Structure formats: C-alpha cells, structure tokens
Image (cartoon, rainbow over all chains, first blue to last red; front, side, top):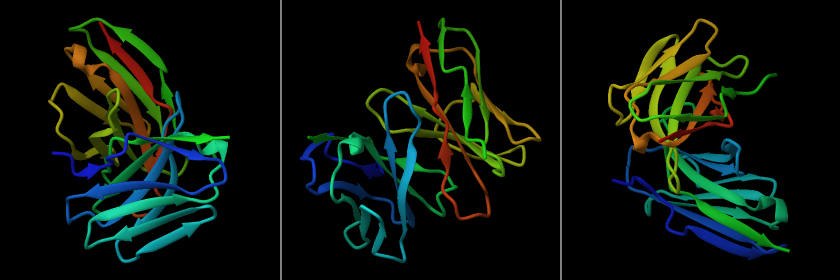
Length: 113
Length: 113
C-alpha cells in the first residue's frame, strides 16, 4: 500500500521556466511533509518542508503548497536551473521531520538548457 | 560540524552471508534511522534508534537488526542475505525533541549475488 505517491516518474522543463512536482498521500495521520533532492551516488538532501497547519512555505526559488482536503502537495521551482536536475522525493511523517519518514517513489527532473 | 558518514560505500556479498553496515551521525544528533532504497523505489523505513534503544520499526524481518552506541553512531546488521536485499542502504541522523529535519548519509550500495 503506497501511502505517498508521486505519479510522474519524470519531468523535463526548460531552463528559466517553472518546474512543478506533485505528490499525493492517503494517510490522514501525516502532518509534516518534506521534499528531498537526490543526485546519483549521494544521499537525499533536505530541500523544504511544510507543517499541516500551513498551506504554503517558501524558501528562495522553492515553494511547497499543501492542500489537506485533497491530500495533495506540490513543489514549485522558479526559475528552474540546470543544477536542479535530480530525483525529487516527497516524504511524510506523523510528527516533525526527525521521525519515521514515508517516501514516494520519486520524480526525475531534467532541466533543459 | 561533521555530516553523516556511512561505510563502506559499496559491498558485494553472497546469498546466505551476513553483513554489517556502519553510520556516524551528525554532531549533536541523538537519533539514527535506517532506510532501504531498492532500484526505482523511494527509501523504505527499516528502524530507528534513540538513546541506544529501538524506537520504531518498519515492515522488515527480524534478520534485519541494529545497534546504536553511546556516541550515537549506529550499525545495521543483516543475516542470511537474500538476493532481494540488494539495495542502497541509507542512514539518517536527527535530533529527537528538536525541529530540524533528518540528514542523510551517502548510502551503502549492497549487492547480493
């Protein structure tokens, strides 16, 4: 049972445009959501997070939106840069991001110069 | 501030053998979690250790076991290796009681032949 789903295995975006990565979850007990970025041969790197009491969190070029009623979150990257090319994982937990994380299967983002 | 380090980076074992993977947590962190990432999948939670005690376990058989030491470093042991155990094993350290997210090591790539 996949409790966190990323239905797009891959996404290609032109440099300078907006990248939008989507994530859906099924478990209503999740109340903290994170995005991790992963390059080949490296561990996941924390990118941005959001608590369920918020519907938006912004950090520089990265913004995460949470729609609790739809159990959906998205990551927006504006403007997209070549260094953003990586695999992006959505993760969820029942508490802060230091607790057990349930991950999606990832979306490979490719930024086209 | 030192990051999370894992050893070894790559390992090849034969089916039926036992393996020990090691993780040094980030300075100031008291909690270590282990994840298994199979090819094309997101990381799956194996277990978490806090103050040398197991503090949560995912859906993995008992032949997956762990230890946490007084300096908060950790080991993951897998007995009776199976071909399906071939995966990237990730260690994440965090601070229980804090509000910071988990930081991951670069992983150990285990191949079982």
